[in-house]
Image (cartoon, rainbow, N blue to C red; front, side, top):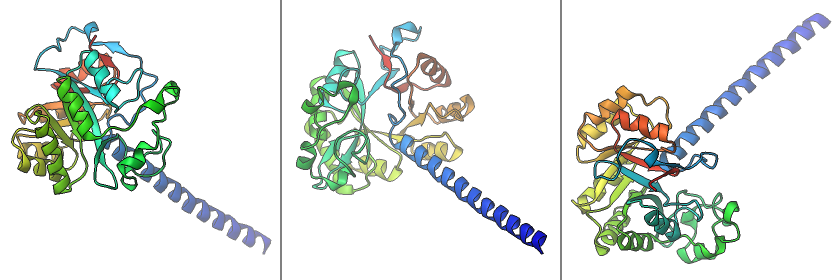
Length: 300
């Protein structure tokens, strides 16, 4: 009888462990999927603090031409917080002609420059940007440990302020947008036209609805589709929309030369993000990419 009880208890334990293993595996799958989504929406999502800065002049590839664009992600943020007016001005001073940044909508419907939907990791505020009015955001401070003594003077800028800075310094803005709100997307086009840079600007999104809505409002603004992985489905999207450019994730090692070549064969402009070493830059350039979003490659 005791042996039967032992066997029954052991069976129950094995069963329990199997269920626990399945739960753990499911949790890991969900976590990995979440990370992929975040990284796709935000090219600067990966921590690059341990990657040293490098100079483009150390390669044999000429970038001072219209053929190749080096795009400063969040501006130049070596000594100032990214996604601030100071970072965009620093990008200009460092010789960049292009900057990439994301925008979010506040509770009172104002576009602001901020890379994440939530404020927690980069400010002393908590929760989504959409739960704060712009003036409530001004009460908070950007939270960067490595320049903590300066952060109080840096604030989250409005899109209008960012575009005024781009216009003043002849910078081309690549604006990452996730919203599909027709009225708010029209507001972006109006701001671009107000600053006279509608023909020297780009909207970037992983949602084709957003890009189509921008195209309805303007023939001048460039549109770029952002993808993590170069798949046949994504190549199909670009083929169906030949006027739309394509950004893929250079940090996704499953993106091989043949896949990128297929993307380039569509005739669209092709670029990539998370390009933070010269080795990655040279490799992706060899694949056919001509636009590179970077946080670590310097032009000077």
